Image (cartoon, rainbow, N blue to C red; front, side, top):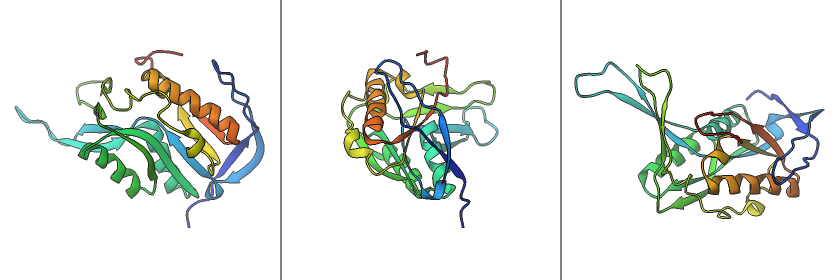
Length: 205
């Protein structure tokens, strides 16, 4: 059977609209197998070299990533009672690639907005570059319209909301949705797991 790793229950959050403050953890363990999680963030298509490059071609391995989706997959594989994922994807086959990847890993991919405009963010890894290259400025997620997501409908029934510090730096819409998610978590008594995951290239709070 899957491992039953302990998850700590934080005391209730007290949030400020401008600078949310997270409460310290208490000492009551909660087995991950009894917890339900929902993550919110931008998924990425990841391209990595899969073999030596020829003169005019470079074999690439395509994968699906994104910090919050990766966490949802890890929690599902660790035996969480339920792991869900909320995001915005473009209509068309590329969005379908992300949905199928999450579902195949046991993540519930039902809370999605399929946008007609925009694309999907990508991350490219090059053998001769020390850092990955991102293309996400025109992604459907970055162009998320404020108030599109109804967190009062999404969050009830979940124990944990997982967020990162990447999302609010991707644009005004993602920032608004991120703040709304934190406020709704407080209203509904949902604990928040916040991974700052600071990316200097994106900016700062």
